Structures are given as C-alpha cells and as structure tokens.
Amino acid sequence: MAQRTFAIVGGGGVFAVHYAKYVLERCDPKMVISIGRSPERSSPYTLDVGKGDKRYRYEQIHMVYEQDRLFETFDKHKPEVVVNFAALAYATSWDKAWRYFDTNVVALAKMVEELSKRDYLRKFVQIGSSEVYGSGDRALDEKAIPNPTSPYAVSKLAGDQFLDTYWAVRKFPCNVIRPSNAYGPGQLLYRVLPRAVLCGLSGRRLPLQGGGTVRKSYMHSFDLAAAIQAIVDKAPHGEMYNAGPDKPASIRHLVELVAEGMGIPFDKLCEIVPGRVGEDAQYWLDSTKIATQLGWRPTVDLRAGMADMIAWGRKYKDQILADSTDFVLRA
Image (tube, rainbow, N blue to C red):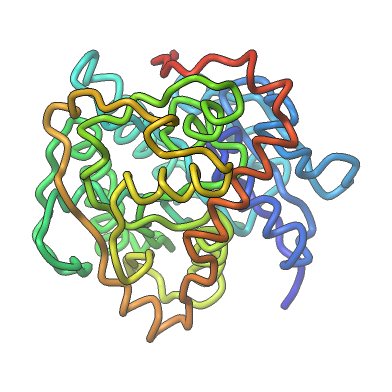
C-alpha cells in the first residue's frame, strides 16, 4: 500500500494520541498531522508520541472557530485519511447543552461539506459513541433503535445521521465507528479509572458513584486504535461499525482490579456516593459485524489493561498528583 498522510482531528485527546501512536508504529505513514484545539499537553497525556519523529506534527487549531486555518492545513498536506475524534464529550451534558451541538453537529457538518470538495480525500472516519443506544438488557448491534438519554448522546447521534445521509446522497467516503467505553494510559483524571489510580497513589479515596453498579463494556486504547485502522483499510464506504468486547463489566469490578493491582483493599480505595442522574444502567455492544467483515477483535483483557493504567500512573506519579480531577467545559 502506498504511503498515506493521516489527519487526526481532535488530536489532543488521549484516544487520538493512541491512534497516532498506532499509525506511526504500524502503518508506515507519509505524515501524521494531529490537530487539537489546545496546546499540546505534557508527557503524562501525550506519552511523547511522535516526539522526534519527522513524520509527525501537532497543530493547535480550533475546529469550531478556526475552520479556515483547519482547511489551510488540510490543503497544505492533502491527507488521504481524516479521522475525527473531535467532540465535546461528557455524559453529564445538561448545562450549556447547546455547546455539544456546536462541536458535535454544526462544526462536523461544516468540515464534512468542505472536505467533500477535496479530491485528495479517500476516507473519513467519524468516532461515534455507544451512548446513542441508551441502556439495554442485551448486546446491541448496529440495527438497534437509538435511545439517547443525554444532550451529548443526542448530538452524537445527529452527527452520525448527517454522515449517513451525506454518504447516501453525495457519496462522501465516510464510515462511523461506535466504540464501547475506552480507557488507556494518558486518560484525563476526571475519568474514573485514571482517578482510581491517582487515588491509590495519593492515599485519597475515590468517590464511586452509585457504588459502581453501572455495567458497560470497556476497551483498551490499543484495541480502539486497531479497530479504527481496520475500518480505514478495509471497510466499504457508508458502513457503520460497533466495536467492543463481548461482555459488560461493572465499574466496581474495574476499580476492584485497580485496587488489587495496587495492593490496596477496595474499601480503603473507595467511598460510595450517589449515582449520576440519568446515567444508563447497562449497555454493551454486539460487535459481530466488525469481527466478521473486517477481522477485528479486542486483544487486551481487563486485568492487563488495568495493569497498564497502574504502570502509567506510577511512571508519571509526580506530575499527575498535581493535576486537577475536575471536568472543565472549555470553549
């Protein structure tokens, strides 16, 4: 396969970082352009991906407010592949809900419309969300009726449906992946798993919402990157794919694995606090389609994944202990 240039929009996020790492190490790219709204973060969150590699560059561009600059960058490098991680992504999205639509729908639509005019583009992959399905008592496949239960989930569904229509009418070369909950080294500290590791390192207690009874499927960042690349390389245009493990696990179980891996009793690591209003009680995905059509299956089990998170926390302990665990809704 000829060398390709990849543009990763939303490139400052942890899963975009892991995808860039995967492409650099396994795909022999001509260039990887990572585009994020914020300055490039420090080593605990970038993992020094691309450092010293002439094939990698990071550009600080805000996709909502700087689309002219975004397309100057696209037109300069002419990426054959664009992968869009950019999203305002926080399930508790009832405050300033309109902000989620600005990024997840309006800015996406503007970007896609402009990209549709570029003849260098060969594939656009949208990172969707399994939260569009809502809660369910079984594994949900791509044909399941969406049931979003938060403004965030509604905005993600709207973006997916826009792309589906743009493919049907204008043959825009796109795919959507709806991954399960992902985790991995470098994840920001307001998320439950890195926060659990941080609490284990600092002696603080993790506030475990609702006792951690919510059941979801969890996928390591390496497996997410591999699923995205399988879609880039093999998927017919216009197809949507779920990607995740076969079975769900409770958040409590994952935190128990963190406690076990750090040698801390579970009840010393956690304190139980009220659950989040409107949170889906259980959801997981049927990923048969991506397995049978593209040959992708997850490879990192939860115990190995939690060990990876703990190793990351210990490596960067001094830096992350000083960082905030609060979510901030940024411009």
